[in-house]
Length: 272
Ligand SMILES: Nc1ncnc2c1ncn2[C@@H]1O[C@H](COP(=O)(O)OP(=O)(O)OP(=O)(O)O)[C@@H](O)[C@H]1O
Image (tube, rainbow, N blue to C red; front, side, top):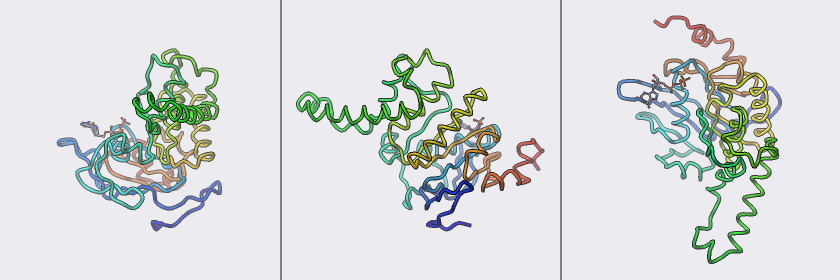
């Protein structure tokens, strides 16, 4: 077991730091349905942490607890060592947490560039009145925001579609634009909701490469949920496996791959 402040070295030689977020004995219910049953795990600075599990395992519910969207009935979520109170989405963003969604949530009629710009909203300090009265400051801020956005657009190799309305893009590129918008917020913790769902093999390979590059280049801590076990195994440093709301595995990809409970869950072995 790792202590809170322990660091560890990954298979590819990266040093992972202390705990960024800790889930302690989380239980989440929807009426009579227990979506998450007494689950604990942590997310560490600089790591790629995956949560996987079959249909209905409780992954989306868990991501919503991590993002602060759902408040569990039992247990606590600690962020940088402090219990996190219930927060509104903008407060979550102010804490340096950004996310993407399973069903793409972009402004379809707007260009790629404008969509990515919306990721900067949280960094815009001048209001409309200030913009009218104090043009210079607003312009400076706009230029700084544009610079970040252009950097992200270059990084994710979407320069060629920057003026294209999102509605005209194929699915894989829309997912990349969504990633760009999340990155434009310069998050410390990036949450990805099934980033590879619905993609073909080539799109999955591209997305995997970009996730690794984001982590490598910006040092962003990444937590992602994914249905397909195969795609995350090459990406992740540590993996939590959920089944029927319970945690049945937690460790490196090799550890969870060889865990009998995990193998049974994925092969659909009957439960007692
Ligand atoms: N808003 C909700 N209201 C009622 N029940 C819910 C709600 N969200 C999730 N559930 C239930 O909680 C359980 C876990 O669902 P969840 O969507 O978290 O699983 P999942 O692992 O993300 O599934 P999938 O891979 O199919 O997306 C399921 O039984 C689901 O029906």
